[in-house]
Image (cartoon, rainbow, N blue to C red):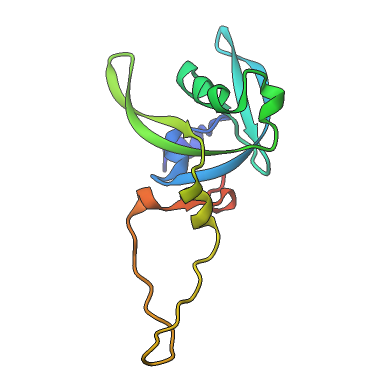
Length: 142
């Protein structure tokens, strides 16, 4: 029995990403009660769980898409996990970044290149590991 399955979280956490980067489309941001505090929670199109925004993630998004969360609607971000310090100990944390041209290029299927000698397709080269791959939002169930 896994305790994480016995007590599912309402909000997205780093473990939900399974070590991968995931591209999502923002839908809305709501102020919700979490413990004794009111915090912004960012939701995504086609997803049930939202991300409780910390100052770092909110700043990354607002620096690029603007201060008003209404301007974030229908805009892409990439979610990923990093080790961070929380209450004096190292723990996985969620971070966001803005997609780059390279991320957008990887979303499209790679064109098949022809081998001029054999007139057949060239073997595809592997360009990297997990950090080079951004998964579309439907590949991670959250």
